[in-house]
Image 1 (tube, rainbow, N blue to C red):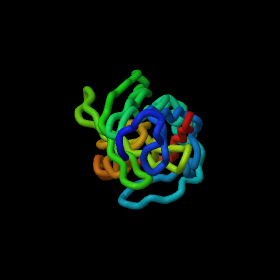
Image 2: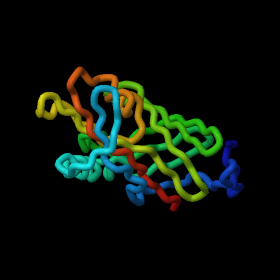
Image 3: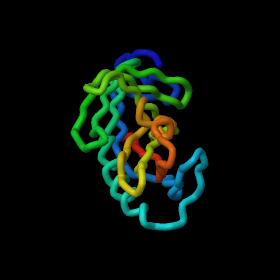
Image 4: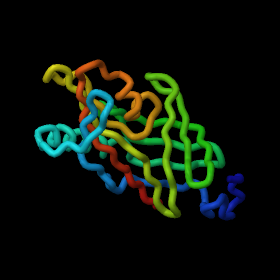
Length: 175
């Protein structure tokens, strides 16, 4: 993407900067899966679905908008996984349809990833809950961010732990 020169449209999507993508909906929610002893299988019993539904409601608040300010700067506004509001000025890079936003926050260096298709942008998300001997020990509701991905939660499991999860997309629409 090149710099914006006046009213000139820039980049592969012919944007006039700044361009704002606002939260629209959660979509493409997978069925519930259970991961235990190294195997992920669909989970047909609904007793964990309510917990995951509640986590999806939290995930809805995680991205209010993404504002692309210039060829390499953006602003991300939303909330962290516990609901605490967050507004980050970030660097970003673009490779085709994939945008990677990077910034520093209290938990360290964070990276968000999104995929764009013309006037929409989507971010892959995850909601999961981990149980050990029938007791909940951990939960996660997040958009793609380093350290909070499905593979990270699987790596933390101990023998006998059970992870229930759904993946989803957070859809943003260009203003």
